[in-house]
Amino acid sequence: MRRGGYNNLENARSATESSLFDLPNNMINYNERMTQLDDKDRESLQRLRRHLQFFFLDPMKKFKIRRQFPFKLALQIFKVVIVSLQLILFAQLRISHVDFLDETVTVMRHKFLRNWDDSRG
Image 1 (cartoon, rainbow, N blue to C red):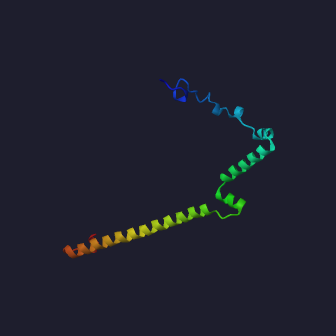
Image 2 (spheres, one colour):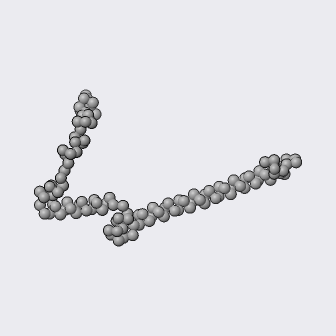
Image 3 (tube, rainbow, N blue to C red):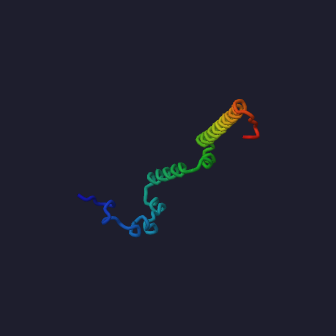
């Protein structure tokens, strides 16, 4: 049994025929639609639009509107600082460990190899 819809190549429309690309003909005029609504629906739609617009704002614009400290932005900056400090500390520990190993190899060569000096490498 064959499935219909877009999974079947015979039933699929090409990209040029798609209604998604016909935006000028299918554009929705929200102001016109809003005039067709009654007052209660219009108010709830406007409230929803304001809420969605606020939801997609960046943290600094939200701060300008609400005058509330952007805790999530501060938390992200704090996490970046902490991870950077951890990387710096790990690198310093690793460098000191590598330096210790190099010095140990130099000491062992000096102790166990006859006529060895630092200039030989």
